[in-house]
Amino acid sequence: MAKTRSAFFCQQCGYETPKWTGKCPSCGAWNSFVEEVVQREEKGRPDVASWDDKDTRDKQKAHKLDDVVQVQEARFYSPDSELNRVMGGGIVPGSVTLIAGDPGIGKSTLFLQCALQWKTITTLYVSGEESAQQIKLRADRLGIRNNNLYLLTATDTATLFAEVKKVKPNLLIIDSIQTLESPYVESAAGSVSQVRECAAELQRFAKASNIPVCIIGHITKDGAIAGPKVLEHMVDTVLQFEGDRHYAYRILRTLKNRFGSTAELGIYEMVQQGMRPVSNPSEILLSQHDEPISGIAIAATMEASRPLMIEVQALVTQAVYGTPQRTVSGMDLRRLQLLLAVLEKRGGFHFGAKDVFVNIAGGIKVEDPSIELAVVCALLSSYEDKALPSNICLVGEIGLSGEIRAVNRIDQRIAEADKLGMDVIFIPKANAKGLNTASYKIQVKTVNKVEDVYRLLF
Image (cartoon, rainbow, N blue to C red; front, side, top):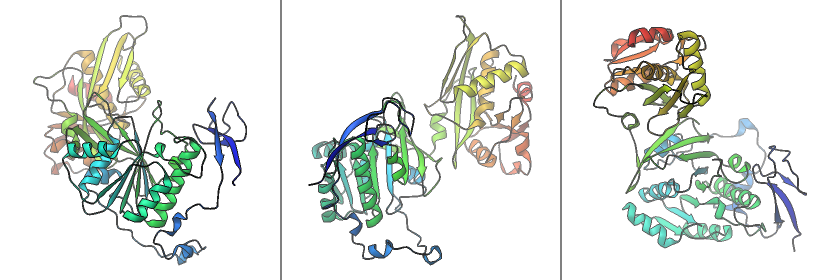
């Protein structure tokens, strides 16, 4: 019999201690320790490192770095182009991917749809939250049939690995990690020790069998991935699925990727037939107005290697109460306060007695500082109550002295604006060096300070 003992685990980072502590010494969280019963049993544990791998023992020996032969692994290209983009060009064999998001955002639908569309490989979909009838009902709604898709409704990892040996899939999907239970840990499903042990077993299986594993996870009320922080360290790729319930668009972001960029972005539209990848998101992020409206400016931003045209909306009104309001949706509030201070100090505009509201249309969040020139022009347009021409686009980062700083990948931004039919684009003067504007139909104007833009537009 294995010795049974209890320990206290931090719900935030997974730190383990034999007694209760008010403050976690690892992450500093208060009142985050929960007692869990832990049973250590080394004998009888399945050796997940023996999955059809004859050279397993040889791989566990020490080698010189120069003696290691590099093998170029061929990626699995899924039918979902947006998923391939955020994964860095496809799914790497033996990789472990964690996707998290709000309840009902579409995580299960996205991966079930991907498994149904991927008819050239065998996929095992393991669900601990839904029955086989519920998954079948969702598959019928998607309208896709696939004879190579196997369903397993189980929460025990021993049963899971036994079925994997029978099916021999090319892709394993777990929905979700919080519902799995390992028979070697005496804790409830979803606890810190269970999530950590189940993730470790799946990681060992993926590396030994060279089968990619996709894990669906929950998030806390604060938006962080539920479970210990070590869960994110174990996996190779972490994806965040986000979106507003009031919009039909969903955004798939890469938070961690050992095989590609961590700044890629995938955009989906939630329709009755499932998740539809959006190949040209700039068209859906720009509103179509019959007549010019004040307080609206178009910005050309970059999300990793993808250029996007977004609409910045601003509203400046007289403050009714004593303290003016500053409300932002889609960008950092501190950046808006900085831009208002620059306009107040350098431009002489009295925003101190005004309520200011800024919104990025489409429900997306933008961290690229190159949209600041468009934000400033939208604020000035609403302040002066003069509409900007609908055929202009703005790119530039604003400095504390009011200068417009250079941005990266200016040629891709100009090409995107040209493709969408814009007539004029304002870019920083520092970006004009070595730029060949003759290859574009769009007119390129360079500006150095905010007052230059104000004179040209207002």
